[in-house]
Length: 333
Image (tube, rainbow, N blue to C red; front, side):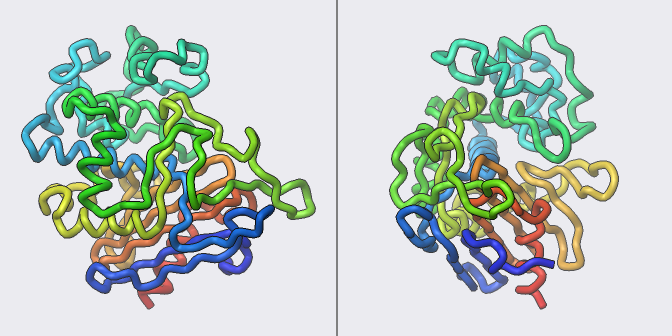
């Protein structure tokens, strides 16, 4: 069991099956402990892997427009793509491609003037697949997905659309969904109305800023870019998605449909997130852990429920997905 009050810096957005309306939008704690700036529902947080959901949306848009096919080999889009005759976009967005893991450490040792995708393609050349595409979910260990698949997804989006990844998201997702508080910026940029990330110092429980002068450590696989957003904007994306403003209803259903059964009781792989059968129907979950921050996004599609949890303290955190699940079950009682 846990209590929200146990976590001194937390922003919670809970959305129940009330059409397209926010049922609760709660902000507690401090966005900036030194300056005593309080959280608000419009406080921006870094999304990390949560932004992969935008990449999935972009891929499905391009598929709907006939500019690419989910089941077509990637080699038809990128001629020199390693194993491009076997790997499809469907495999990439479900993280079942079998492409070897390319770590940020490996990318750091390359020329930082090159885009991460170009470096990764060179590193993948000549390497065997880790497994046959579509047969396993790709993780780096524990429960963390490898960045390789979505690094390649961003590259595919740029190749097919002819736009940079950030330009595409802004024009085709953020603007149509009304996500006016969502920005993509280089690590170290001054983001207005954003939460600072903290860790817990020693046994005292005192909060201390994360390293690198309170800035996120840039990941080479992100080309040093971070998506910052709010709970309200994430709901705007979800609302625009589910009412068919971004992609057609059949593709929306596909985004919430299991792709591959995972081992044990860990549910299914889906497009961008994991999907599990619950007493309330299918529940999707995606969790991002960043230095000084944690983010959870959960849906229960049969109940039209959407939950976002942001925290700007990385330690003393419950097991992944626990807060959003507790909030969901409380809302559905």
